[in-house]
Structure formats: structure tokens, C-alpha cells
Length: 161
Image 1: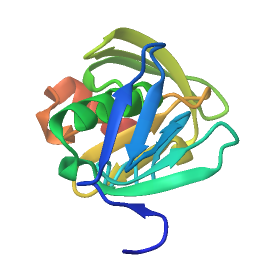
Image 2: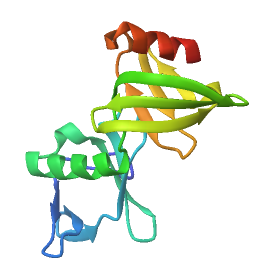
Image 3: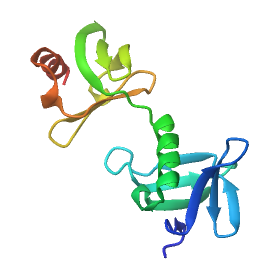
Image 4: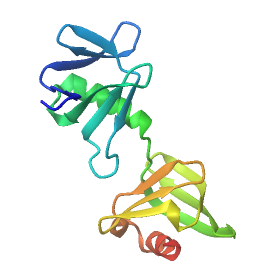
């Protein structure tokens, strides 16, 4: 086994009586303070790094899908909190505010949002039609497939990119 890799079949992730996320690896138990995806956009379920209270790496899980159901569910919940990324369902408006700053009003799977972006570096196109938009505060929004948006929303996004 590669150093740092955890054996998905031999570990258990659980919450203790205080609600802390814990890792049991054989007889050893450690608190997980943070979980991070190595490739959050391209391989979100692979190479998950677990960190201790000093932000030192505890180990890496090669594939979250190899964990038992309970461990997988707890780790996914933790990652969802860390990588909160609403999915844009509809673009209501895009306005140029000043100097390349654009103001977006969108409907997401988590409700309506208004945000600003600064320049084209805020928009990443992955594959043929997946779009990730990062606002001026670092919040990310996803359009899983640009082709699934209604024609008006699609044309507003295409106007920006």
C-alpha cells in the first residue's frame, strides 16, 4: 500500500458521543478535523485527504465508494458542508456593473441568489458544457450542463463567456 493511503476496508468513520467525526483504523482512533478533496471538480469521490487538529494529514482515502455505507454517508455529509456549491437552474439577469464586474441574479437548487463576479477568470468551463462560476467572495456555483438551461439563461451565460 502507498504511504499515506488508508485501507478503505479496514477503517471506520463515525461520530462519537460528542458529535465529533472520528476515524478508527485498527485499534487506533483519531478525530478528523477536516476532510478535503484532492480533485474537487474532476474526481470528487477519489483521493479524499483527512486532517487532524494541527492540519496534518492523517491519511488519504483512495475512493469514498470503497467505504462501508455508514462511513461513506458521514464523509459525504462532511464534504458537502465543506464544498457547498449550489447548482444554477435558471439565470434571471446579468448586468455589467463597472469595469468588468458583472452582477448575477440566479435561481439555484438552494433558492435565489445574487452575486458578483470579476472578469472571465471567475468562470471555468469543464468538459463540453459544465460551468463553475466563482463569485467575488469565493463562493462557487455550478451549471452541471449548460445545454439543460432554458434558452434565455443559456444566452445570458454565453454573453458573459
